[in-house]
Length: 184
Image (cartoon, rainbow, N blue to C red):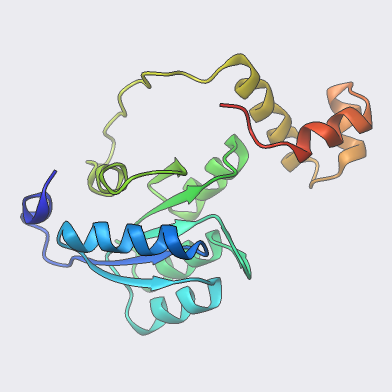
């Protein structure tokens, strides 16, 4: 993908990048600008929602966990102000439960960090109903297990004792698993 050819036929090229990691936010904003977008950046939920209310963008790239709250609140505000906006969620803490929540709030896709600008643009400009290509590297068994644990944990409102009981697992073992980063 290169420059304006990516956005041929798209009139409104405004995009909001809400990300609390400044280096990542800066790199993503520069890459999107180089590809023809008009970028506005925000580092908090409050700033992102204020921008959405003032000038709702056509596109948005929202981090799930921002310093002052949940990025899904930004997506909700965006769809109130501009129902046709296309937003994706980026996160380093991916799990099935949050992916489902993001889609229910109106996100069109959910990408794991680090995602590059080409992945972001592909997701934003994908035809509605288009099926993604199967991954070259499917999730490992350890990752599938971790995803299942995260889903049950979310369903139990992040109650460790209840999650451990439902998974038939010792509470301390579960706490150790939850404290680690997700496996690849």
